[in-house]
Length: 224
Image (cartoon, rainbow, N blue to C red; front, side, top):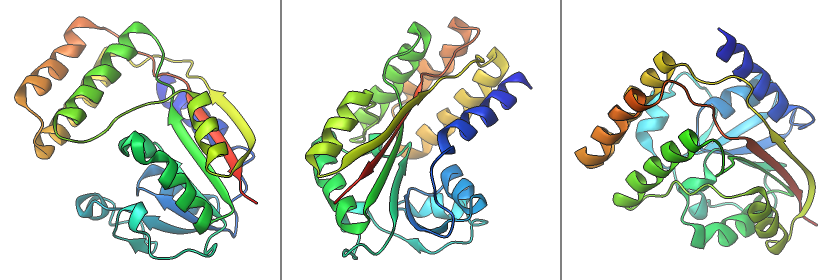
């Protein structure tokens, strides 16, 4: 119960002062951020390359572009804001600059919401395992510090107009950690991750009774 209340507080902190009502927002990656944007009154268009995720979120009724963001077919500022909410770390870091430059062609504002790479030793062990598992199948799960995203934004032509870190106050209990681990293990299995990583993941709650997520970095940029 305490964790649920803290999760709600964290979401409120993330979205506080981000003006989206009646704005056309490109949400890169369908999910919880899409639901929140609808709740906040945005006119949302999702860009999602994974058909399975679209099917999993079939209750979300917004226009969906089924493609990689780098293949987004429209430019000329067709939207007011592009958002990467816990998704840009899944993109090859060598393509971050190209991705943000494209975002600047699509909309005059850009919002990045990303987990910080550093946290408690337990969290860092968890995130390292996740990163190694994704790298093993040719994917990415590369968290970067606030300064990295600010620098890439600036090099891509954005002025950083707002930045903040949102801290968690409540740790995950072992039971909740087990629930998250098991859900993740099933996802990894479907993605073709080696059983070696899945077995290591499932052992995680036996070694750790609790875990606190790292800070969440929120960076808003504006292009000329």
